[in-house]
Image (cartoon, rainbow, N blue to C red; front, side, top):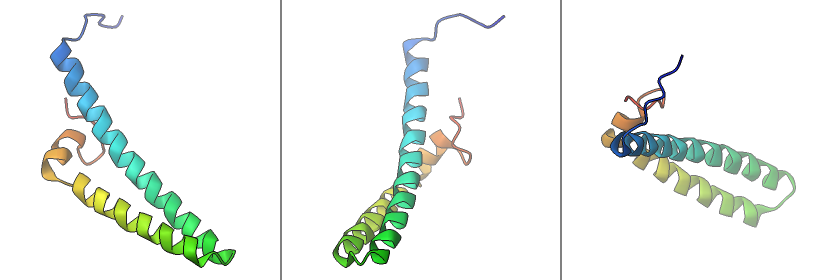
Length: 85
């Protein structure tokens, strides 16, 4: 039988914060991957202007990923992106 005791508002907020930080990291990873693939395909179909815009997106996402590696954020997400609470 599972514990059906309600979470306190504070515990819920802690859980939600960690969940959203993990989502941000996942989103950044997937966005960078998609931008790289799109940039490769844009070269394939001779869309060099679009390729440059996609490179700019990749740079911006890389900056976001660096910000997400902040030690305080890492405490919440852990190395395997699991909330440590």
